[in-house]
Image (cartoon, rainbow, N blue to C red; front, side):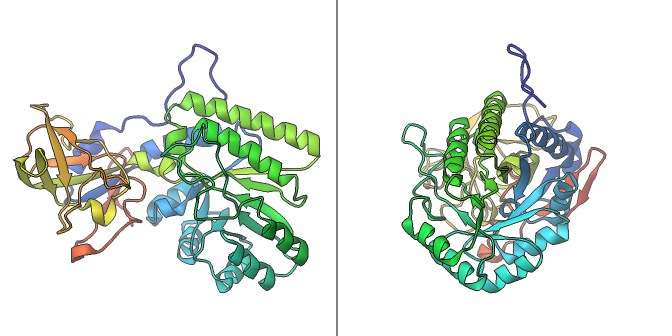
Length: 400
């Protein structure tokens, strides 16, 4: 797919789900997490076509975002690869049928790396010490490295927070990296990075930066640019323009150096997040709570236990519900943890939602729940996680 001509609107990556999905979901027990497979297939098809505008680029999904094999098998069937952060995720990726797997993370031991290498999967070292151990265990064999990318101040922001200050990876200027690889003779074949949420400017800068690093390593043939597609695709036209710039940049690099170079992307939330809907029931509704200057509505699901990272939109679960008076509402989870509120960010700041007056038994739906909801699962208060279901355009079925 190419960018539409100037003046032509660019269709968004995500479209609204069928109203039938919500009507089917009214029959489910709560809490229930429903994946819109119809919407997921549509978005993955568009995203894969967008990434393919970069010649030879590959699209993977970060398994940290979803551990539900029924959903992962769907993504594998659509041709995506998988990036894994542990042996457990690797085994899940294999069971789901992913043909292409990459791996990085501090959890991998040398024994783990041996297991993955036997299957042709390389672990990209996320620290100097891990790289040192890999070189010692596999003398002269190819290695991969995760790099920290120092983003310029003018494009750094609070949503990308993981540039040069990331706890993972090495700096390309670290003399230990060059000394170690020079001493051991292990060829460096892949660079791996992730900078949190990624803007168009981040993507272009990272591509140029990592291609410059690749000049120093003649054996290097793959660059993994990570994920962060929620921000990148806030405006799809800007994402397409950035991908076009990346394609030109890589083509010029290949022509100038005479070397091959494959780019990989590994979004997680950007692939799955918009296509999950968490259906909940109201347990209590306190108007004008004296401590919060807002209504506090408690539902039968816990943000603390399985949805701590995002601010969803919150809507009546019944698509035919009539809007009423709008009130500022805090949506609380059903644990005995004081800060169990949906929409709390990583800095502990709470968000209110504009909802009509709620009553016990009302059903609500939380959007953007398709990623990390299950993989963040805690067992605080021994509360059961939500049941998981998939809507395929004709009905809803359980998935696991």
